[in-house]
Amino acid sequence: MKDISESQARLKGIFNISVTPFTASGEFDFAGLSRNIERVISLGYDGILIGGTYGEFPAMTADERATLFRHVMEIVGDRVPVMLCSAGSDARVVRDLTQLAGDLGGLPMVTPPFVSEVTDAQIISFFKQMAPLSRTGILVYNAPGIGITLPPVVLEQLADIEGVVGIKQGDLNPTAIDQIANRLGGRLRLFCASDLAFLGPMMCGFDGISTTNSGALPEIILATYRALENGDANTARELHRLWYPYRALARRFGQPQLVKAAMNLRGFDGHHVRAPLIDLEPEIIGLVEQELLRLAADPRSGVTLK
Image (tube, rainbow, N blue to C red; front, side, top):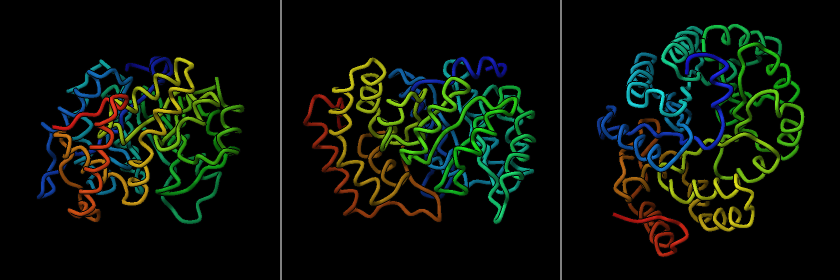
């Protein structure tokens, strides 16, 4: 993407949150990452997200993240829009990665600063400093799991900042979703940050979702989203219900560990997580395999095993 206008135009639909495949020794497997990206693009995903929370960015150095950005943009080019997570606890690193992401043609995804007792005014000032650094604008990531939860009243103020093209909303409280959808819809792009419960936000008028579990179950999650997008709420509901047992495992054992295990079982390139995360134990992987077998037995899922 070349500028903010193009980011605003293309920022919609279903985006795969790509896990970062690490070798057993903790190195990047760039070939595996390339295969994973090509898979979701070929299936028809509207975009991808790189180096996010479930991409394990907190376990990477700033140089590693920059290398990851460059590699992915070389693979993808301009075929689909790419969100590049530039979040961090050091504002200097965030500045550098945000500028790099925009220069590469991606859309930087920025969280509030990870600082104790930071005020709303300081958060707004931080985003005002970040937005001009990227020629493609920035995406505000409201990520309760890794930091501050931004209330709708603050998100409204961030929406007024020039260069903020969208919000990826991780707080899925129904009241917050209702307020955001009705106060900010049409002003900027709204993304649901979780595939575990995206039907509600989409029905409220969100513009898209980002999905980690599509690394392991790309077919059924894409079919669910497309059904909802086409106004077929009944089909979307039934497909979403079909993979509930998998979601229960994901909530119980955590992402991206479970996603990578499921990808490995399907012959995809999930590989390993990095410390402090730990790969799933064999008995838990057995539960994941049982769930994949159940899904593979239902033709509606589109899931196959190697």
